[in-house]
Length: 375
Image 1 (cartoon, rainbow, N blue to C red):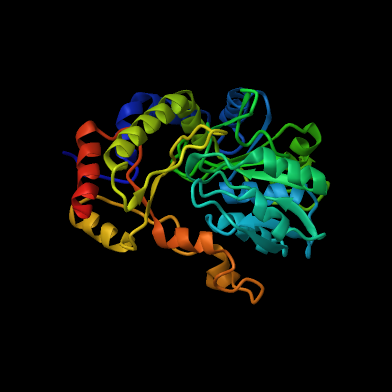
Image 2: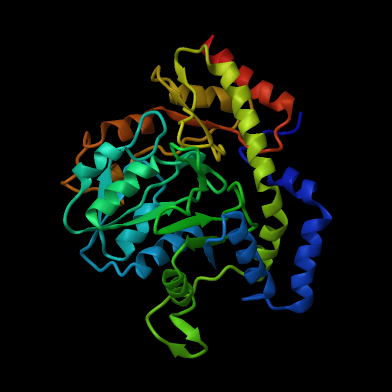
């Protein structure tokens, strides 16, 4: 059995083989490494995948979030609602723009924002909510968007872990996450469900005006060369990364389906272990399992991780502390105990290897190793 990895990019490389090499070679031959034809082609193809929404490629997922806030004209002193349990980028960009982060509680089941926590987080200075579709499952978007519309504020979807996830409306309609708020953001970090081989990101919006502004801000604030209409940044997806993403995009749904099948197998191994809670599958969302994340209810999460490492099974903790308790973001307004569910998740969650190239033998070995610990 080959060595276990959280994400096996080596196996992915073998799967795509000459397709990737030829795509990269074409860029090397035309030498347009920045703003080459692959970038626009990828934007159009991703737009088609997302139902025709406008797509602006950028340098990474963190930039995507920052560009979104800049395009919405938030100003220093304005406030943004962010889940207390997520990766730092969601809050980091707000801090960099001198906004005040207002944390909100998350669910113990789906790990995303709780709609009932939004009113507590609300203040008249709030200009946007940033729901994160954590681990590959949609946040309860209808309630979040309804709240935002009532308050007259924007919704920026952080879909960095959920590209391909579908939100399911009560009437059966479906839409890709990232396309329902005012702006959606994603990352193409190599470990994502759709990842390049470096950094990359993209921003989505249905608004032509916002799309034009996002593209302008990402290109130093210029529409026309050397005509700078506003202060912007330098945030570009390079041509080689776009070429790689074009090869991989047609396989995204197939790979996400395989991830769901692996999650089903994991669930079957763990459903009878009282000390484990398998990932919830909410009725309003599909789940693409960017991470397969368990909750260890017995207080032995760290012991389990150590045991798995001894067995050669990598396991990660996403995330070991909620953001309101991180040194850079601590505030007297949010002492320990402010968000008990986010704090509990940080003590309980553990993620197992998850990628579409896991073999049946590997899945069984990982699952049996977990079961052995609880025996």
